[in-house]
Image 1 (cartoon, rainbow, N blue to C red):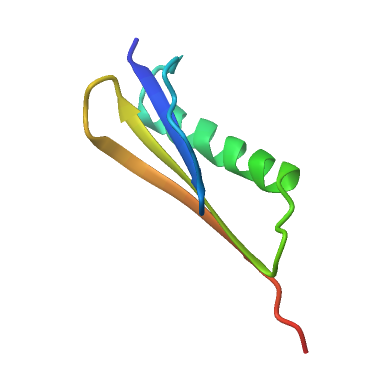
Image 2: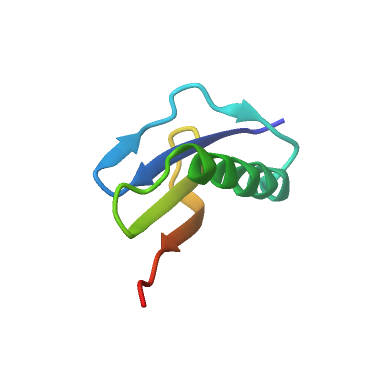
Amino acid sequence: MPRYYFDYEDGPGEVHDDEGVDLANLEQARKEAMSAIYGLAKEKTPAGDRRDFRLAIREEGGPVLMVVSLSLSVERR
């Protein structure tokens, strides 16, 4: 079973995943990233009117296989 790593970025902050998670395949890693990014967005309310979240999925020592991103913005009228 492959181990996938999820590196997180939201503007100035970046967290490099050193532990990873064993998952059956890249599709399962995509589902995990989608769920995680929604949770992160709920926890980290934007200080301003915009915030971008990004999770890069990779295997150990390998290149980025997939990027899941989410943008939150407020348009004042």
